[in-house]
Length: 396
Image (cartoon, rainbow, N blue to C red):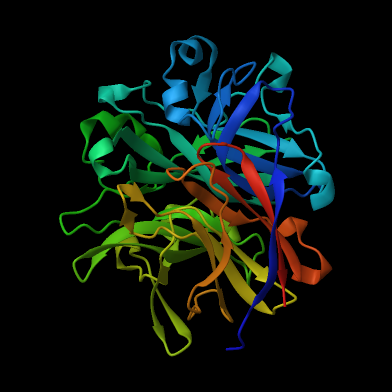
């Protein structure tokens, strides 16, 4: 396989800081090109308010600020949001003022509500949108069901985030109202009874089993082009390998006409040489590569003539009480979407606001690429700054 190298990686700037929906920051930042020329961007936890009063990302932890009395009275966090952008030009993108769903009512609003009450059983349990695809004037957004606890200071304030399930939401033109699809066949119930109300929308049960393995949360990366009638969907998971916890991805596919039927999905079980062997059992899916931290992107790059994935590297290094994970954006490439995939290539060292900042949610937005893919654009999110930061990548 021919080697792919990155000629340059340059920081461009933050996106969507100027808006008319009272949005003060968000993470996630998947983008889905629509048939009408617009681009739908989806986000995870979204801060709503009039200003970021007395907050400096270099001097104060954002979580500490959000727990201040002023922020409690003036800032609201919703679990997800989405906006439309009318350009596919990256130069215009950094200057654009997006239109958020709910903006006409005065502020951005959730597009995929949870059935669970806030802080149910003492934990925060949101639905976070992942990647998606537009098919025949319908948008399908995969989403994960999560339960979160407070960060543990004894573990370097590493986040306590558990993905217990994944599902799909759908919207039809003009794509401003989403409804969650119920599966055609249900998996096992979530282990935690507090999560059972979400069962009606659970396509894949992603609870960790007794061995420390789990079914992948499919939808963390979706190829935006249909290949031979199939939609290809990557899913992130955790598992144990040689006594270590490994973060990696598995691969699923489904014919376009069957995307709403979970029983019609198949999963890459193994490679016979370069030939993929598929299974109907999501638990039997192989790990196609590892090192990613949940969110990612997958695209076919015409300039390179290869499939490429970008993701935030999870890492596992602790230094002086600070976890040095989520600092780098990695890339892999392959001749076929099922692999075999290259070894990781470090493409960018993320800009941190302070040593204990984390940089995550890295992914490509290939609809903004230039020169046939020779130049492409990524985003990542600094937890401290809490806006998508745009990166320009040029291949050799």
